[in-house]
Length: 252
Ligand code: 6AU
Image (cartoon, rainbow, N blue to C red; front, side, top):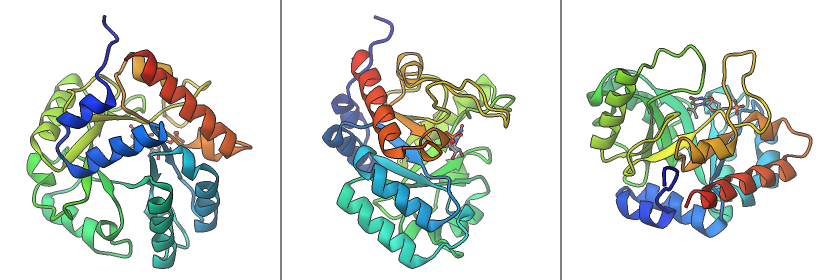
């Protein structure tokens, strides 16, 4: 049957990186494949959101460089909650430079991403070497961006195929962002998720969780505004958690 997929348990056998395995364990334990993108500029708002949705997510995705009042006490506190509530911290840095610069951006500066993030995102535009020799801690994984959710992106099939190949060959890569099925040895992360919207006027495209799992064979949905801008993020997160979990079970 066309839509059949392998289970998270089977997928865990194919993923060798410990953080990939850990993410799957969390997903199975909490029955959630929902990653919330907390694209907020105040630490208080991020912590408030986390207090509402922490039990419902397997990952919290951040853009730390948009936070106005970033501090180590904030990040240490968030780290503590992530351990207590069992979810991973993803920094959506989208590294996109040569290896040396990527490495500096990962370890230094104000945010010192490698000191707290479980996962960081990276483009592979600069080639396979650009994500090698990053001196990632052993318990930190990479997610590559092979294809974006926006319309008018410059990704063609050829680029995407090559990006997926680079991802498969790098043992630090646990998975990728794409809008299509990918090899079972990669975890597939799907941003651009919304129950009702198809397209926003800022260039992002959206699909329903059902489509993410049925058509693209997604493993994790990434939801931003639909949850953090909703009137009741707790209830909305639960709705997306449910939808994502049912969509997964339906294609098993
Ligand atoms: O649900 P939204 O549109 O409010 O938020 C989507 C989040 C944002 C984007 O920076 C990010 O997902 N994103 C990514 C990621 C995760 O890297 C890739 C992509 O193709 N599209 C996309 O929106 O934080």
